[in-house]
Length: 283
Image 1 (cartoon, one colour):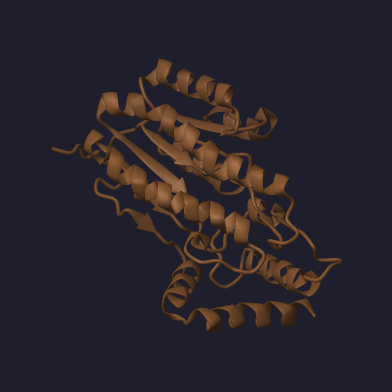
Image 2: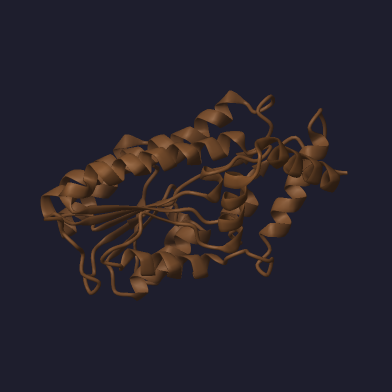
């Protein structure tokens, strides 16, 4: 018999990538609901304000095994296990495949894929021992389709999509739910700070200018289809409290519509739609 988490429990929560945007909003949502909330980031100074709101703050760099070990050990000493893990930490670089530096490829995979997996592996033994747990992976609608300039970042989200499915099946018998969240546009500092490279020179400058223009317009707080971090955090909190959550969620009309279009639109028509539109914007 599989364990079903009750909605009135207040499980300890570990959230990665809380320095701004969605991670910050998630930490506030959980701590306000009464959960022992461990907000983490690479630099403690970036999350001091969350400590003032009642969160425990942890210095956690998901690319460093010793940092992961220390953070998880602290929570397990105090609570026995991590009840809910939210893998939110991520970095993004938008640039053409031809020109992206291999170091930038490695950095995105180190954080978005290898780091996420390392944190997850560390919390599983205690979750299994307690017969309870939820792992919420913050993916992207770009994990189900690819756009020009986003090949590597979106590839990391494709990888997460695959790992998430494997985790869900493998951990089910231990009472651990695994849930994938694939949002569309979010008006967050993460999105606005993501690098868009190659806008000033080179063969792809018009394309990258178009990408920069369209992406920044989509991230304005009142843009059509864009969700605020607070709204998305409230949605994810509700999902985390469900005794029978769905396996994946695609919050927002942007995520749903683009995933639907990619599924049914012929590939060359999809290509033309993106390239012509973005280059037109770039000119």
